[in-house]
Length: 409
View 1 (tube, rainbow, N blue to C red):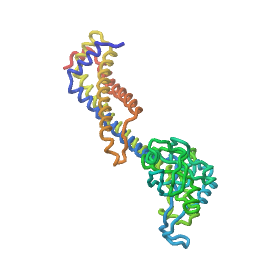
View 2 (view 1 turned 30 degrees about the horizontal axis):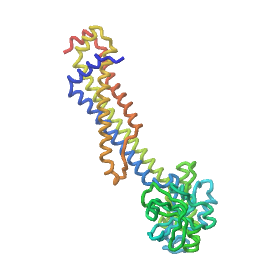
View 3 (view 1 turned 135 degrees about the vertical axis):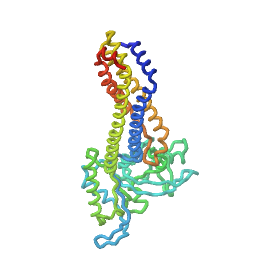
């Protein structure tokens, strides 16, 4: 039951000792402020890495080649390493159980013309699985399919901004455009969370590009989505094994990092996970230490406060006050101070993060913020802190005998 008189006494006690209350609150507010800022920075680091690969599948691997920098097996350095269809087929044949999606990619730059409008755009010739590896969002129509590959159809899927450039608000689906004077049908329009650069791309079947632009089976790189049931360590091992096997097939020196490189998201996820976990524990250690110091500080202040009020407690007990009522009054006062001060620290910390957030991107911190889980955790921390800070001094005060308390100076 809410006891108005008890709370009136608590506020009177705080009002009489403003400096003490402010010092008590400052220790807790500073602890929660520091806690909030540290957690916000750790979240900002996680957000940065998430944002960096927002348009790529979390389980993707990217195989690319360039020129050799080391001689190997009698072959000179400076050779241009060329991936072909046979290398993609090899991956599927040898590692089918570890591969969820796979697509080759071939790059072209063409001039697209529709009636009086024309511009240059980047073409990505791909397999159907590329949609899932790049997280392509189909807004209209469809993506490249297997029938397009088998029949080498002259069809394209255009980005949202390509449609805007060529068609404005008019319908683009089903229309024909010229790519370097070759007619293609638009079968889909897509958007991409990667931003404007991604939405100015155009997709076509890779078999069509190989036939019309070079008449060969060359590909520029390979994208792989490894089986999501693989653990991080197994996915990293798969990427390492695949790199060794491709080096052998392409006659590349084992230490030639320029000629062949596999960017494995599993490695990135593992490294980011280890970094954020380490930072999380550091935050917990520093924040907890600061909070404990705050609790000790407010406990000491409460002890001093109780010593000043020894006669008051003696009179209360002489008049029949029970020890529980004294404990309750002191604990409530401590809980009130810690709660108000803690939430001030939390609000101030959140405000600081919101103000400086945009300026931290150059330090790999994106949108630093505190999650709702942290707010709930902070609430329970404040309650526990207030109880710990007030209970022990209150218990000591309640054990004072009235005669001893009345004699106190």
